[in-house]
Length: 470
Image 1 (spheres, one colour):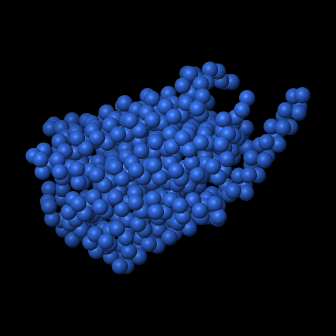
Image 2: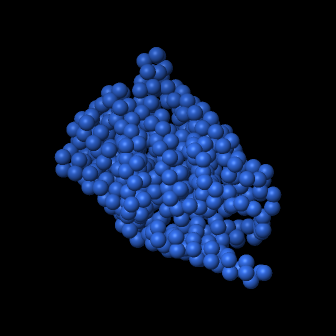
Image 3: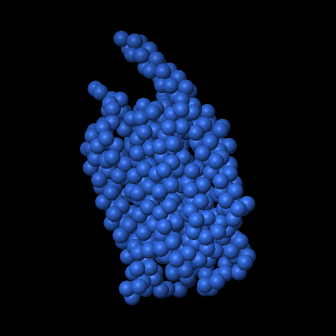
C-alpha cells in the first residue's frame, strides 16, 4: 500500500488544509486581542478579576488537550482519525465565541460563572479543532522541506484570519455604534460574524482533507477505561522525557506568553496612551498581518539556507532588539511609531508560528526513532496545551499589571502610572520573553542533518525487521 505521506502534495490539498488557518487565526486572535478589553470596558468586570477569569478558563480547558491528542491518534472511523474532531468542534466553537462576547446583567458571582463557562467552552472547542488539525499537517507529508512549505502557505492563510479579527472589529464596532447600536450589541454582532466565517472555513478543511485523512477501520491496539488512562499517561510521559520536547515547551512558554500580553494590551495602548481613532486603530491592527505577509518569504528562504532552528533564533533576536529600541529607547509616538513597533514584533512572531509547528512535527520522527511509535496527535497537543495555558496566564498577568499600575476601567483618562504599566506590557516585557524563547530554541537538538539521520536510521531498522521476518 502506498504511504500517502510520501506522495507530493498538490496545491489544492495545501490550500484545503490551509483554510483551517482562518479558523485558527481569527478565533485565537479575536479572543486574545479583545476578550479582556470587552470584559473590562463593556461588561465592566474589574481588570484583575477579568484576567483571572480568562486565565482560569483557558487553564481548566488545558486539561482537555491531552485527551484530544491521545484519542486522535487512536480514533477508528470512516472519516479518518483527525476529521471527527474537526467536525465535533465546528459548531460548539462558533457558539462559544458568541457567548463570550455577550454582555449579561447579573450579580458579580453569576456573571463571573457565566463568562468562566463561556471561556472554558471556547478553549475546549478550540483545542478539539486545533490539535488534530495541526497533527493533520504531519499526516499530510513526512518530507522535511515540504512540511516547512506547507506550514508557510498555511500561516499565510492564517494571517487572513488575523486580519479579519484584528483590523475589522474596531472599525465595524464603531460603525455599528454610529447606527444607534449599543457597544454591547455591536461586539456581540462582531462575534457572530467571526464565528460564521471561521465555521465555514473549518468545513472547507474538513471536506478537503478526505484525500489525506483516510478511513480507519481497525487499529493494532485499542484501550479503554482504566487501561486507557494508563496508556494516556504513559504516552505523555514518553513524549515529555524526549530532550527536544523540553526545549519546545520552554520556547512555547516564553513566546506564547509574549504574544498573549502584546495582543491583549494593544487596544489599551491605542485607546489610552496613543488615543488613536477607530480608523487609525484599524490600520495599525491591519499592519500586523500585513507585516506577517511581508516576512513570510524571507523566513522560508532563510530557514532553507540556515536551517529552521538557526533561522528562528535570528528572527527572535532581531525582533527583541527592535522592540527594545523602538519601545524603550526611541519611544512609541503616534500612529507610525506603533506601526514600527508592530513590525518589529511581527518579525519574531511570524517566524515562531511559521517554524515552531514544523519543529514540533519533527519530534514525531524522533519519537519513532527512540520509542518505535508515531504519536503526532499527542506531540502537537503539547503546543495546544501551552497555547491555552500561556494565553490565559498572559491575560491574567496583564490584568494584574493594569491593577497594580492603577488602571481604572471607568475613567476615559488614565493616570501616568497606569499609562506606564500599559506601555511596559507592550514594549519591554514581550522583548524579554522573546529572548528567553531564542535561548530555548538554541538548545533544541533537531537540525536538518539530525532529522535526515533519524529518518535514515528508522528506514534501516524497518528494512532489517523485514528481512528477519523473511
